[in-house]
Length: 109
Image (tube, rainbow, N blue to C red):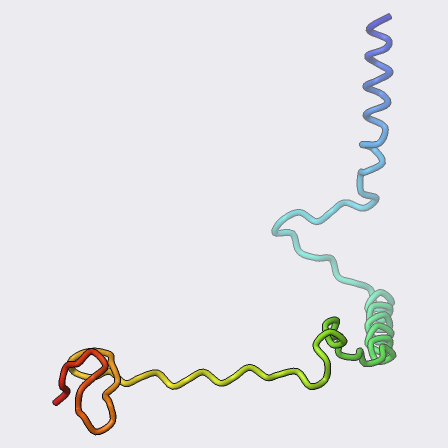
């Protein structure tokens, strides 16, 4: 009885595997594609033209801004970054106006 049950289970599992077999053999690696008939080529061209025409029928999409109602129309723009301080011979500090010394107290020459 166990042998019969095992055979039925194996048969049930193998059935779907045969359904996955391709109808026409798949080309193997390195194998050349077969030449298409003129009818197949014309059918492909017509399908490509129809695809291109259908792309033209798609309307332009509006810009999607999900935070637009939260942010509002008069949102503040980010401030520009400040210009980096120039380095001196003694360090990276800025000179005080007219004194010739840096913030650290060293003199610049």
